[in-house]
Amino acid sequence: MSAELSQKGQVLRAVNLSAGYDGRAIVSGITVEASPGKVVSIVGPNGSGKSTLLKSLVGVVPVLAGSVSVGESDITNVAPERIATLGVGYVPQVDDVFPPLTVKENLEIGGYLLERHLVGERITAVLDFFPRLKTMLSRKAGKLSGGERKMLAMGRVLMLTPSVMVLDEPTANLAPQVATQLLEEFIRGFADHGTTVLLVEQRAKAALRISDWTCVLGGGRVVLEGVPADLERDPVFVESFLGGGARH
Amino acid sequence: MSSFGFGLVSAAVLAIAAVGFTMQFAVTNVLNLAYGSIMINSAFVTYYVNTHAHVTPWVATIGGVATGAIVSWALNRFVFTPFQRRNLPPITIVMVALGMDLIGTFGLQAIVGGSYVSFQQSQGSEYHILGMFLSGLQLTIMGLAVVVLVAIHWLLRYTRLGKAMRATSANPNLARNSGVKTGLVISMTWLISGALSGLAGTVFAMNTGVFEATSAQLYIVMLLAAMFLGGPGQPYGAMLGAVTIGVATEISAAYINPEYKEVIAFLVLIGMLMFRPYGLFGSEKTA
Image 1 (cartoon, helix red, strand yellow):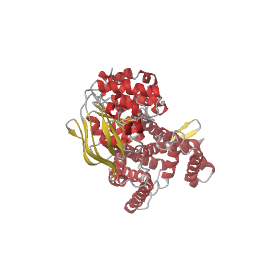
Image 2 (cartoon, one colour; image 1 turned 90 degrees about the vertical axis):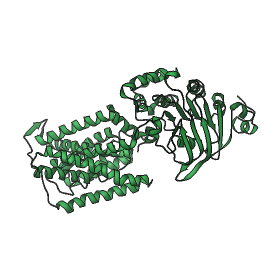
Image 3 (cartoon, rainbow over the protein chains, first blue to last red; image 1 turned 135 degrees about the horizontal axis):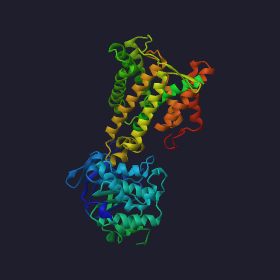
Image 4 (cartoon, rainbow over the protein chains, first blue to last red; image 1 turned 90 degrees about the horizontal axis):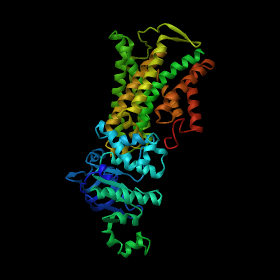
């Protein structure tokens, strides 16, 4: 199903990146690369700079040093609306929909860059993927439940057939069952189709299950990274993020 | 009943003005207190085109509308935006807007003087409708307001630009991440809302009959009352707020000294802020 919604990915790369507000770096010296067909997850404690990192990749937070590129294009400090044209879809952790707009209007804004005659077709494809949204097209996004809202946020991004998906805690405030479905069925599904996925996730265990590579942020820097299987053998990582001896 | 008729005409003028004022606040987060001065400057442009080019006031209105649009756009581009980029507190922008209002009003007065002027225009035939006596001009103003409000509804609800305006208003960063050029959307908002201020200024001047440079100086109170009554940043709320304030102030003027019209509007505003600060159409988040 995801074959109709996302496309073959491009490499999203940040090299020696520092980013923050008012000239003050929140994250520093970060090098991370997400490749087509892979899920790269970023985990870390609250305040470690995960969201700031993602925002700097999509042009919302200024990059103070280093570079960001997608495919062959340098997108360092490029405007978010320009980055969207390069196939990068971003779902923020909060404020991920337009509450006063209806579900249909949210999807239409998601397809803002499409030619007008293609918008309806894309909405149909997105609704086939998230059939639950079909019955609530005229409902205001602000009235949706957490799970419905997150589906809409993903649907909005899928309107442009992204090649790179940047997702900031997509399972926040979702029931465990819905979160598992979102991660294992949808997000992993996009990567399996060839899309590049960069994911910030609080549920470390769940993130590791679907990831090909994981970076651990602490104090605005990458403190540990590797394939999930290796990280699960790291006692410090296990103690900090997997709840002691738990591995699954 | 005649007070109710006057109220409807005042409401029609206020509705045109309030929708533009609210759109500016909703999309750009600027409480443009200079709106009244742009209205009266536009009215004077209409007046000069009317009297010097010898065209009807309705044709001359094109000049007033264009003035409102261009001045509003320029005000945002060269005054408000540079201040906003510096991330100053919202009160700073309010003070800047207040300063621009005074510059606009008294600058105009310095140029045109303090004399009252009026359009070269007939009031038209008088009509007796549902116990109200209304002139052809008043009916035209009311009809124009209906057309404008329907057009704004159509713009916001059914056009790509209107949806982008609402998206930008709700969440500008997310709009940009969706590919919306919010800078362009904001410029279009100032042009459209500015055009509405030009049109509102002209019909305001037509409705009052005679006007001078400071005639709209207190009109901002009516605009604020209409906007807060409907809910800050809610164009549909502003329409309802305008009708309520327009009718309430005119009916009160029939029983109290008409000089207190703005006082009545201000009382409504304060009452609304006390009991429902987010207005009739707003939510706690928008207040």
